[in-house]
Image 1 (cartoon, rainbow, N blue to C red):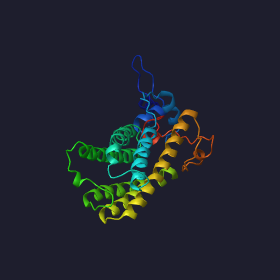
Image 2 (image 1 turned 120 degrees about the horizontal axis):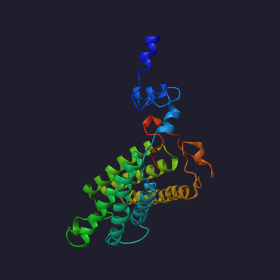
Image 3 (image 1 turned 30 degrees about the vertical axis):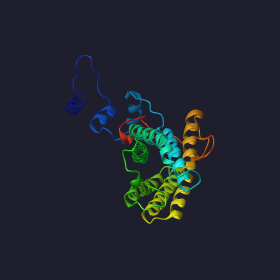
Image 4 (image 1 turned 180 degrees about the horizontal axis):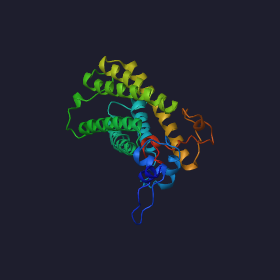
Length: 273
């Protein structure tokens, strides 16, 4: 028994202390969370991490998305404007709907939110392309006769919307794991993009109108979701419920907070926004 004790507790060098059983378990099986008794407390007491705070990027991203879809959707539904209206819309669509939303997508990547990265990255890039197209038309660098026009067939431009319909549809399915507001918003975007694609492919005015209405509905939902996130940040609790899968986040005044996610190997680091 004396020999076994000597092997388990070897002589200590100067300036060092013997490892506790929890420390030995942690070094032998890193990242296992609280599988070993006492390891949870060990992580809390000894872990030191440095974080770079990131505000919820989707607040900016959703406001940018709402701005672009509201303006373009209402024009597409023939609520206002003429065929020359995109020449007045493209600067704000390019900057707020495109560049600002694209930046929000990259910040969402830092926040480890895969859904927001995909949505803001894809739609931000789309609105950048939309803005650049009509910018080129406005300066005479792109033939005006080839520019997309409501009521005229343009199969190439229809494929823009087909791609966005597919991406938004997949994102809507993924958003069911986050909250219902985001899922409904993405479903409206996917359906609106589908009708818009059909309207430019056929061509079909009624299909373009339906697509425009759905874009306006998506813009309203985006404003609601962005306002809910912004108010939760400023008040520190839920003000506008978004239908979160966690029941605590749907009660005004409640807190839908995440627990420590030790399975990521970084105690205290919050994954998402």
